[in-house]
Image (cartoon, rainbow, N blue to C red):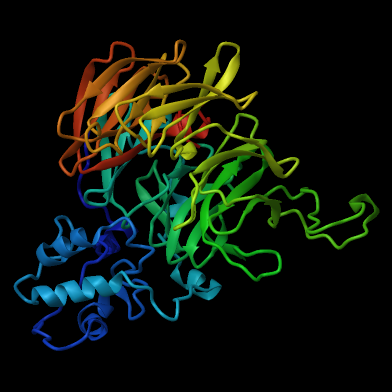
Amino acid sequence: MSDNTPDNTLFARVAPWLLAAGLLWMGQGLARADGTGAARLYQQHCATCHGSARTGGMGPALLPESLERLRKKDALEVVQHGRTATQMAGFAQQLLPEEIATVVDWIYQPVIPAPTWSDADIRASRVETPGAKDLPAKPKWSADPMNLFVVVEAGDHHVSLVDGDRFEVIHRFPSRYALHGGPKFTPGGRFVYFGSRDGWITKYDLWNLTVVAEVRAGLNMRNVAVSGDGRYVMAANYLPKDVVLFDADLQLIKHIDASTLDGKQTSRVSAVYDAEPRKSFVVALKDIPELWEISYDERAAPIYDGLVHDYKMAEAIAKPGFLNPRRTPLDEPLDDFFFDQSYKNVLGSTRPKPGAQGAPTAQVVNLDVRRKIAELPIAGMPHLGSGITFAWNGTTVLASPNLKDGTIDVIDMHTWKLVKAIPTPGPGFFIRSHENTRYAWADSMMSPTAKDTLTLIDKKTLAPVATLREPGHTLAHTEFTKDGRYALVSMWDMDGAIIVYDADTLKEVKRMPMKKPVGKYNVWNKITRSEGTSH
């Protein structure tokens, strides 16, 4: 069963937001603007859609932070020739090549003074679908709601919902531009929250196939997290430099500036994740050597910042522990991180500063004692945020991909020692598995020569035992059905596909055409925090 018809939702009404980053607005009667500067060209032809301060309007924000994954040559190509499935038509015939190049160069420069996004802006941006809250609490489609896959198609900025039993598309709808950080589900699996690079959070009712509400949390956002009890949503922003807390209906509760205690230094926010057993959000800061834990437990212990002789004697003034940051000082900032099964330990990667000497490192931070307790013996550039855990030889191990080296590093999570470095054909971004499958599936998508190859690793022997290839394409991001019987793999191309494999025999079962399916997310595996996927 497939439904590809346009739906009368907020997504349909905001479809113009799907314009690609770097696109310019073509109004009626555009004339050549010889001799004018980039700023004047922008205000004349672009500001109507993208905002006078480049913060977005009908189209996405055109800021360096928003464009960091779009290469200039690709932006030039889109401006000249347009992009399919968007309202952007190419206008190489209307503007001179040097004019296009001038404006493209200019939008990659910072806006001075830096644009702001206040609490009033956040509240004013919020919209909701009338009547969505009163829709029935049961799926309007016939499939197992716990074995549903949410597939993000970056090629034309759509989301497909896939039946994980029949491997058929139930529904397909347009999304905001450049979804990032993975969708997050409510505990019952009915609602999903999407976060976009441009700072928009969308709450979508999977059972009734409609948007519930949307809000813009910032101008450039990294990801969102949903509390384990489903009551809160938190956004991590690069611009402005803060985290923003909402209730489940995306009503603003508060924002917290990402700054040192004295307020003298600010930071972009690398990531926020939910630590459900601790009833808290954990936040990594990109530019400040601190890790934050923000409790959503009303009974959280008070927070004593700074030195206190004996907090039991109430010798200092404390902040409430509820919805305020508890700071853990670090030697270096964390770029991204991963939890162990207890959620007491955070395993994080540290990137070298631009122009600085030294290599990336990885460390273990204990949230109870609030300090680093171990260094992880991982060379290259570990991508711990995409790691997995599994049982091995009486212990639990972490397997992490590496963005620089062709290895999967396996770490004993009790001793924090390297167990084995498993060779792969090239550096990869994701490794995935499932409790009910014997293999871990690792891609090499960062390799120019091996991006078409998946390496399957036996979780008992820690040895590569098989490879799967799609010559000339990119294979990445495996996700499993809720029972682990089938593996769904992205063929990460504009004319791509979701390839379904039998996880035991490794035979292809089905192929579903998709437009650059960058990620797919199984409801059951996510809400139960499967050891084989990211949380």
